[in-house]
Image (tube, rainbow, N blue to C red; front, side, top):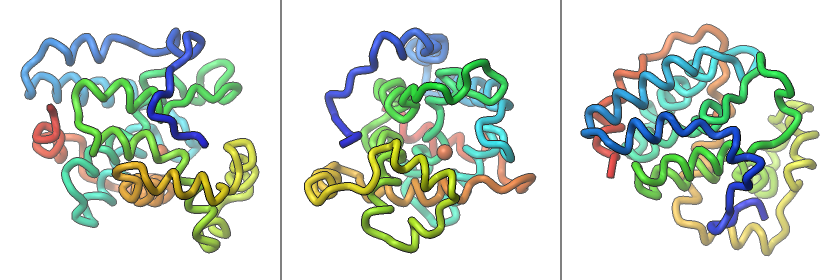
Length: 210
Ligand SMILES: [Fe+2]
């Protein structure tokens, strides 16, 4: 099963992790932490991961869906930051060898944010990738709605979960938040959609800092 609370980021992956944001955030007031986080996302999020939206647009669309659904501040923050691992790993379409290797962006993002945010934020970040396997296992309409590419990648990601895997997944705290986050993630890829900007989330993110 893809989720393991003892997951270690291998040195092969560690070498791609940009330490600069964590360094900035570790010595700062809450206000400064949010400043560092937002300016990092703003600057580095202009790249594309998906072909239709920038990483910043994707994050803002995902957070807007969470806010529209009146999710908890922790889950809105998780929605905003769920793919920050891609940015920290500098994974984007203009980069050489893009998509050649899975750098476990969900684990990297969750681990990276753990010193700053509680589990209610970081676990949904960690789970948004295995959540696809769970949803495909338990919801036929979810599977049917996936693109052909996404159905193919499901196999590489481990395919349908066994009963044992599904039960283990359901024991993880905040697993339901991971599932709803995954559904918003799938929807947050609309070209040129007008969404509220990062500043909308300043107080929400700040109140989640630990
Ligand atoms: Fe995403």
